[in-house]
Length: 469
Image (cartoon, rainbow, N blue to C red; front, side, top):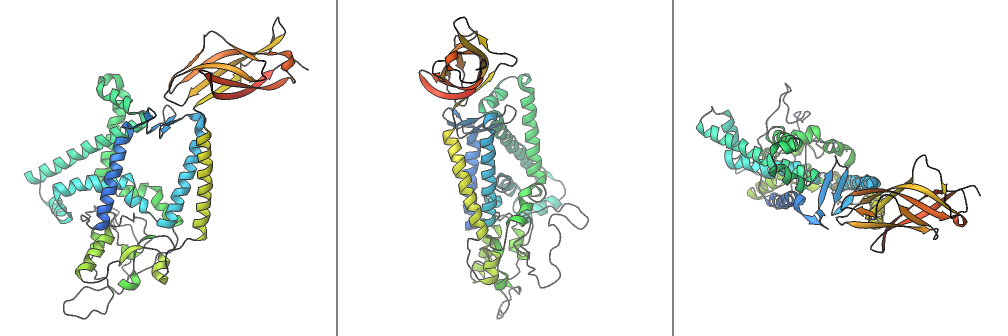
């Protein structure tokens, strides 16, 4: 989707808003937003923050609601444990999520970035609000930074950065809890420091990263680091719903003059939409700007000005490029329908895999280098290794039986039975024994059932090697 040039002069923006002509960083001082959409975004953000910080401590089926333990290759999602054996399910879930993001962006633009993204929520609803509280709004912040160092500036700046570090430490602990679990985090905090030097280093490292991001790097994450912002040019089209300036109604823009009949457009060129933008852009330069996160701060600012000058709201609003250019309403395109169909199919397959997924999974392999053996009473035995994974928070005593052929039996070696710990793995070695009459080929498939308390909880299959027929 090509960006339409709305300005009547040659001052159209052709460079990033946070870098000057010499290539140096331009520090932004966005004005504190206010309005109906900002209030809705604020309460939605508080809800997400509550869920985010409570997440590691919430339990479902005795397990954390969410834990992504990459070092241990164990993932817990909504109380369900996923091991490397479930990688294909996680891969399908990731693919489904990516398709959803593409579909959502095609239809609704980058509303995720402005309303739900943790980077935006922490920066705008936590760190900037601390800044507004201690240093005031944008003009006061600029004046404070230009002023020579005195006691007032010293205590405000020191307090701000101490609070930034404290919040960053809190975020780092929460982030770490999502990786290693809340119990392990509590152990790091309560045990002697020397007992968890690796955990302490991770905690300090994450704190430093979050402090650097929210105290200094800020909106550069969205414009430089995040790939999603750069993909929007590919994902959006002229029917995507975005935060857009109605140039047909607003142009030509002109300042408001008292006691003068207005013949220009409704835009009075007050620059309020620019002053509240957290990434420093002018939304009037077009809807397809890489830095725009669709946070809607400019909509609130413009609506308040329209109210003051007795003009209709909506000069900046949620709309598509075609909707503004042609006066057409939002519609579902063929691409949206195709993506929706693919998403529904992926969700159906993913749901089926999750529903049919076993809580206990066994892997049985013939012991390498071992052939079959004949017993004195005419049966054939094979030696096997078994590994059983428990995907629940419940312990299982395991007994093994051959389900097919029915005449077979199993003898464990060196143990009275398999004890499967909660969220754990157990291994064992056993002989499978079959009468020769049950063997119909040299390499025959057998089914093995895993029972706990007389209940079949899982089954697996393997090959049984016998003499030539």
